[in-house]
Image (cartoon, rainbow, N blue to C red; front, side, top):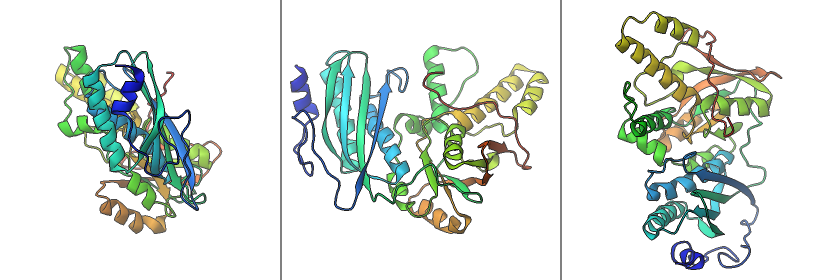
Length: 346
């Protein structure tokens, strides 16, 4: 099978709204009257962003939702997508399942695939996504104000916990087990972009970002862009992980040093790992956003309508050039937290 037969068989459909789609050197598209395009791109590389054992159907869905999550964070409605696919070789069974997953996700959002590129090399998938929105209606990172509440759209840490479990299973580590539920593994392998929520938050949220690189990392982005500081209540963060240490790392270290058995020590290590997953691991693709306190009931109603188990997890404390992000314990004491977030070059 040639490159062009591959594209024609698996990645080409008739145009619906694009003026010119797949088949020419460029696609030609325009937003609907009164709207502008929000454009994003993301690349998924095997071994870096997904495990080589991932079902290609789920991978096809994943690449769509990872990109559309950025559109959701801007309050944009997905319209078009372009795909660049790098394959070590043409495996028709793999490509067929991947394209089925891709089309399933694109159809869910009524989005057209309008072009892209294929080449040979280590497995990598890049997508460019176009969403549309009113030019003055975009959700940005830079609008948080002192007194705003900090919200998250759903549980955190589950995807990171699942990835940790999968990696330990593959490594054959003979130490203590990390047990992930089927739902947590599905959360990691097949994230869902919160597109409907992003649209509903227009005019309500003062700032917004999607959680791809970890809660603390994304909160710092909001704080820096908005010129504010943020406090996060660790007890308020929703998570599906059963055991999580909600104390600071100094306290945890003391308890670990005082442990009298391997079982106790392992339990403390697992609880600390769970805390790290909740605060610092990515792949959640929930929305982190701020809103004025007088919009509390409105936000809660939107989350309930979208069947999202989100929560208010903190507040914007002040306009602050230092842009501090603090984690507070149940007694509102500042915790000693050393974990940060995902960095592609770390």
